[in-house]
Image 1 (cartoon, helix red, strand yellow):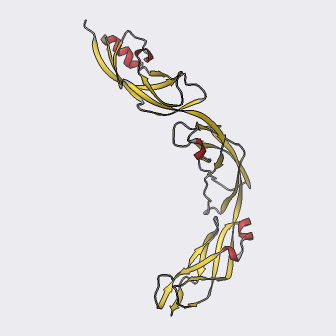
Image 2 (tube, one colour; image 1 turned 60 degrees about the vertical axis):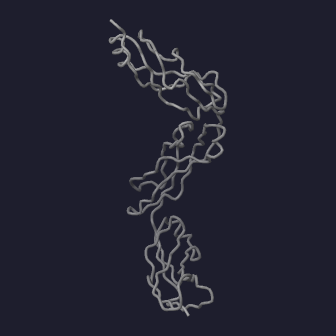
Length: 273
């Protein structure tokens, strides 16, 4: 029986890469191989699809051009390799560096249930591994979001998975960190006679009624208790207005984690002259 020829795509796997090096980029992640053999041999081959093993033992930092050799193909059947496409691959290698990185834990307050996360402490220091050229640009990593389903303790301890940087050549160890978070109940507070900052057109004057505002806010109890009237910014931007009379709302700027309940009044009478 005459031998048959088929073509299949095989993934490329790196082997024997020195521990002090890292692969940044490769020109092809798969190789198309043309194989010759008997039909029964191909059946066994397709049932146990091989991997093209690319030996990187002799690699050096920089761009390496490697010829895809037949002996790199892990085939356990009497199938012959006739050709590979591409014939060469280019592999970009860099030195492997490591450094400790800070951790950001995303979270959202459950304002409907009336409790907030006010403090998060990461109890572990993960180590980032990556290319010497790129690792200086990564200063922190992010975990999965911290979710709290109910408010029972004032402190929770959780283990959260780290979301590695997008590039495949980065690795973080450990893959998860333990965090301690403080939970607080919600409080509200009313501030009266909060001054309003007016941003005016050049060489114009303004008459504003009323001249102050009442602001009700809500947030974590300890934050609300420490909040000062100067922490609340109320402004009306009239820089693009001309002479005339207007009714405009004010912009309320609050510290992060503090939320507006209401503003009285909501509309202000303004006269520019």
